[in-house]
Length: 317
Ligand code: CP
Image 1 (cartoon, rainbow, N blue to C red):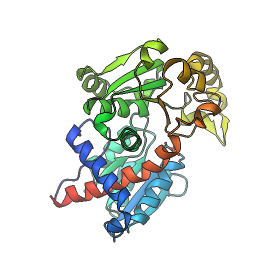
Image 2: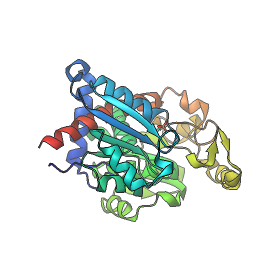
Image 3: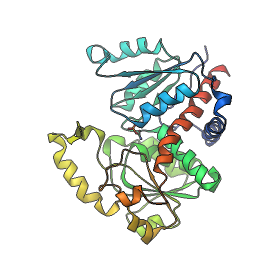
C-alpha cells in the first residue's frame, strides 16, 4: 500500500510541492463545478481537541464542495477521554480517507501519523498551523498577482504556531520574513524548524517597528493570548497573571491604522482570526481598506481543498 503524505509542520515539504498545492487550490477555486465530484465517496474525519470556527467550517464546507463528506468528532462527545489515545486513534483511522486533527499537542498528531494508512493533517497544534499558512499564501498570492510577487511579509506580536509555519513556508518560497515580536510562546518552539528557516537567510528579527516594517507588503498578527487561557469566553483564574503581563508587553506592537500609516501605508492587514479587538489588532485595522482578513478566512477552504485533492493524488502515484 502507498505510504501517505502527512501535513504536520511543512518541514518536509519542498517549495515546489507548496507551489503545486497552491496552484491546485487556485484551479479548484476558479473552477468549482469541474471538481464537484473529485472527492466523491471520500470521508474526512475532523478530530478536535480544541474549539474552532474557521477550521471546522472550512474543512466541512470544502468536503461538501468536492463531493465528499466530513465527520466532526470532538473530545467531549467521543470516547477519547475514556481510553488510551493510541488505541482510539487506530479505530478512528479505519473510517476515513483523510484525518484532520486539531490537537492540544503536535506530538499526538505525530503519533496518529505514525500508525496511519491515510494522510494526517495538523489542523492547529501548539507548534504548527500549516493550513493557515497555505490559506495565507493563497490570499497574498491572489492580492500580489502571483507568489513570486510577494517580496516581504512581517509578523507582529508573539511568535507562535502560526508564525512558525508562515515563516517556514515563506522563507522556503524565497519571501523575506520580518519578525517583530518581543516574546516567543515557549510551547511553540521547534528548533529544527527555526534552523531550516534561518538557513535561507530570509528571516530577520527586530523590535524596531520602522526597521521591521520597511518595504513590507503584508503585516500578519495573531492573538497574544493562547486558546487555553479561555473558558466560555472568560480568562481562566490560573492564566489571569500571564494574560495581564502579555497585554502590557505587546501593546506597542498592536496592528492598527496608525502603525500602518507611520510605517507601511501600502501594506495589507492579515489576521488568521479569531481577533481580540483592542489587543493585537484594532477595529480600525480590521475594517481598514487594506484589510484582507475575511479573504484569508475564506481561503482556508480553498487552500485546504487544493491540499486534500493533492494528498489523494499522492496516494495514487
Ligand atoms: N484561524 C483558525 O484556525 O481559526 P479557528 O480557530 O476558528 O479554526
